[in-house]
Image 1 (cartoon, rainbow, N blue to C red):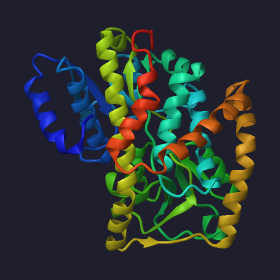
Image 2 (image 1 turned 120 degrees about the horizontal axis):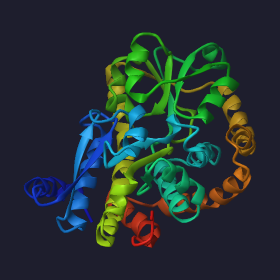
Image 3 (image 1 turned 135 degrees about the vertical axis):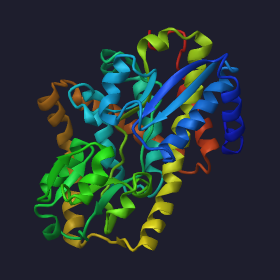
Image 4 (image 1 turned 180 degrees about the horizontal axis):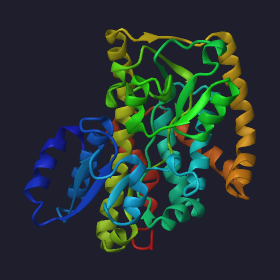
Length: 377
């Protein structure tokens, strides 16, 4: 298992052995130094370790492909591995987005902490083991799903304080999924679709008033310089609409069974590392925001009640939405299948105390059960 103490040495070993290793290119829309890129470096080290030096990964942060380009770029072989943000492409990945949008259940169930850890495990278990239609969504784009990731809860990060329904009227909110778009409409705001790479500029130029995102993005994406107020309790839910280490299908097929198993082991390491970094990074980013003079606010009773009412209604309406908007005839069945898996993972992750423990849990419960010789073929 890769730990953060051995990461630097592993990366050095990877660099030294790059001439003999089969090096896979990894594209991510996150900038250098961000938590997601640090997790990608852990992934590269884990790939080198578990393949015995036969496989390497070269990470291209915010350069080879943007978030908006990664789906098609990975499909066309411009990168071997990439972070596919499926919410950007609702027509291509409806089944993945459906289960990702159920994340508001974590707010409705009053889960306090660890929401992302649970959701990353639940998504991996469901996609690897149960959801053939999810895997087919990826296969249609010439991709193989090899691991999951999830953010911490999403809240409002704004250019001025927003604490009430009155404050939200007419506000333009950048959203990262249709569940938050539906919430925005329900409280009188306007949802705006904007790639994460463009949010800083959108806030600074007044194109949007708020972004609904996780606390670590305050520092990861430099938003600390353009926001004035943060409410991380509204609207809630996590971002899990990801294929964060999806692999080009031909590249996957070209690996040996041992190589594919190494990729799965590295996938468990990545899923744990990125999810744990986000968990740790939330408090750190909020502290940095407070020191910068950003106001940390709470919603009033009216906004809290409106959000709770929306979540309760949306959980029941989401299957109908995906059936009508995306033609998923068994949407209600998917919701029913996924909910107990999520509940199981909330229980499994509640006492996890480190990224290393989380990696072992992910490996034992999910990634080790995938048959590397037949999966994705």
